[in-house]
Length: 337
Image (cartoon, rainbow, N blue to C red; front, side):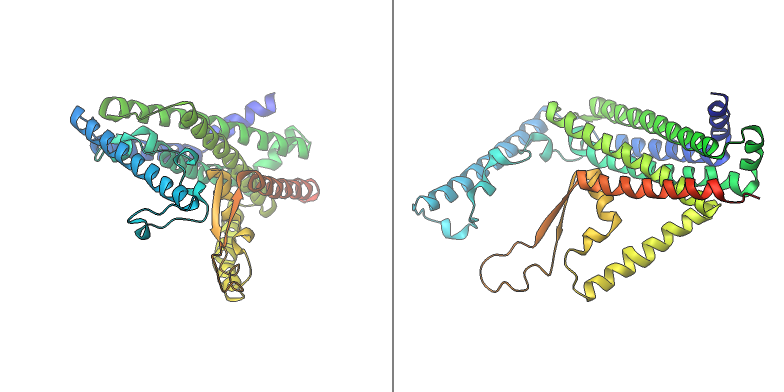
């Protein structure tokens, strides 16, 4: 326990960690202040008009679906020629939609919690992923570069125990900061919606979906912290992690994507880590394969394909575990002086 306590004190005392937390609070404050300044509580007239528009939109969806069903029954109606009707009428069924039109969709100049909670949470998770990666890389990179790890090994001469304690402390600290920051973040915007906006229909499905995004986001934050820690351990410097990520983004995510498009490789997005990160956070991401319909000359061709969060997180977890295993194996045998 003394080793973990010492690592917690060392981590919390690092100026870079303190700076990142200050920047998090600053971004948090600016976002909240901007939202508060640009919103107002809707009047009864605004709510009534928004509800009218939502009801009218829902009625239009039902009528469009009924036109499609009538076509399948062989019934023709005047004016149906001007509407696009898909082969499968279930695509137009309002009952099968993820969400139906609500009054909150038609309020202007009003912060609506149910509409904007997801993008706000995405923004927070993106910052926390960056926070976890940079803190993880600098935490071990600075100690290896300055000789702090060598001094620590004189007190506790077990390399894997020391490195494991550092990684465990890092993950625990990052998880604690992420949970506290996200809870404070969402509660603040919920209060803003109550006093200067509109909460919206917050049912069980909404909270379940938001909680799922939050849970997957926390996993990504921890994986980012462990990845930065592992790369910096192998490179013995914080700059090694930053350089590795920059090289990957430039060489593969940008350059490799261009080469794959030139070669007309099918489903190139499946070869990009950014696709798995996006699917891991959003739950599901749809991509378009431009090569899927090259041989189709007649009829409709759907070249889209979907990547879900389960395989995405498995890929990211295996990659992080591989990097961590390599870092521990190298740290066990390498000369630290």
